[in-house]
Amino acid sequence: MTANSSATLQTAPPLSPARAGLWWGLLGVAAFSFTVPFTRMVVDGGGMSPLFVSCGRAVVAAALAAIALGVTRQRRPRGRQWARLAIVAGGVVFGFPVLTTFALATASASHSVVVIAVLPAVTAVLVVLRVRERPRASFWVTAVLGAVAAVGFAAVQGGGLGGLHHADLLLIGAVVACGFGYAEGGLLARELGAWQTISWALVLAAAPMALLTGVSLVQDPPTGTPLDWALFGYLGVVSMFLGFFAWYRGLAIGPMAQVSQVQLVQPVLSICWAALLLHEQLTWATVLGGAAVIACAGTAVRSRLRQPDGAEHRPASGRLG
Image (cartoon, rainbow, N blue to C red; front, side, top):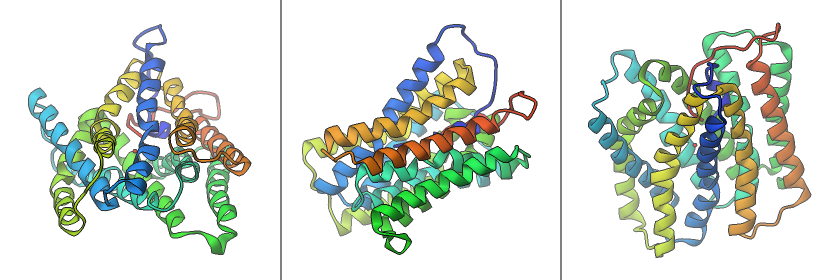
């Protein structure tokens, strides 16, 4: 799953009166929705280590990003933009993929998706703090409720707060890391462009990710089946790169506020794929926990997008793993 937050999107007039923006946004979300179940399939039943999967797919995406930037001759970032890109890379290229992949080595895909579903609300909070906005109280209430719902769901399934597994802590860490990356990336996208921001972040992280990939190859050489390699290719080519093209095209066509809400469908799709592909049982706890987290995240995001007088904010344009 990727990971895309509606919290960092700019309100702008739609470029087309048709619903093309919504369809492109839905295509991007559909592409990202396979990330969690595919990662689970590769690290659980395949012959690939979590370190190789999480870092190797970033190397694949970085190679594609370098080609895209070179062919289109994008201008290079300057000054502090490199430091801000490091935050983006640390959150969305390293933090989220690595932490979620290691978590998925032991946690089920459906369980992980419910915890990760709070990401839009977390990103909204970080953007508010970053740009020093003053949203109304309902934003903070629903954002906190969303976080409580996600942690509560993990705790209930683990037998209480003391039963939170290390996978749950990894997932929570991944959400926080990705939230920072999305928040800063959303602001930086105003200056560099949307797909250009993630592409430069991938290129910036290419060297350390390639080093870690090399370490994983030496320690635990991958021995996956052709299907495993196909899934790995999807994670690198689509989940970390091409999916963003559809997502950002949808946001550019707009209307952005409406298109951004399509992201809330992603956890639902991911849970469905986990049931179909991994044969994971959909329990009432998973359904209710997912519904609660998604509802709180959606309410928090919509609350931030509206001023107390009903006008919409104009936050940064950016991407949400």
